[in-house]
Image (cartoon, rainbow, N blue to C red; front, side, top):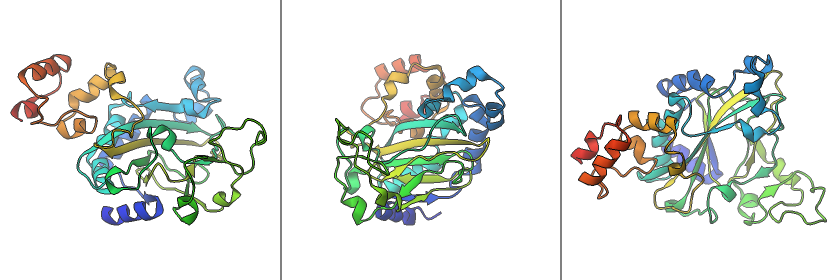
Length: 308
């Protein structure tokens, strides 16, 4: 796959769709591990486990699980070599960080997944997005199941003079004027912008497809209309290491989770560097810190860091 060409499309259009991008050795174990996170479509719609189903009903965002995941195979996806290559190529730097990783299960009829068009910068940076090459951010939808129009394909709006002219405020663009437009409306919510909806296109693809975009790309989630349908995806985000203002989650606040320890124990320097572990040879690594990290992660093979 020509990632250099994909990078140019990502820059020019604001997004690029790469069908079946994940290699089988990454995709297949992750798909097999989805059962550790979410009910299958049949189990959900047949009500096999009502208690397990409950969190997916009502608020669609409650169907999100955050890294590290109950499935080690799913946790490996955002740090896989394929995703690393995508991130380093599109961001044009070898020194990148994974700053967010979420898996999302959606089910027909469980919640209203239809969103207004919007941009993601409000919870992906404490500033606003930059188009400077050294400070771009990368968001990726990873399809772990087939995603069609009827299965809630994300709607993407290609970059154009129209989208480039949008100011930082407002950020959310409803199809029609909000009901409270004349009241104390949210300053980040626009009046109706039906023109933007005329420009949107669905991003579809088989399992393993990735949709790479930028926080300033206008897009939205859409409803699942296929009877008994379900959609399983991941939303992962990368930034250049230098762009410290681009953030969404702090890994330290979940680094005493059992799933975190299981992930670290099997990872190597390249995978852990994406999460902020200093690489071998970094000044952080001394006899003191090597001993401390060995005590915290007794299952981690520290040989590369000791040799470095």
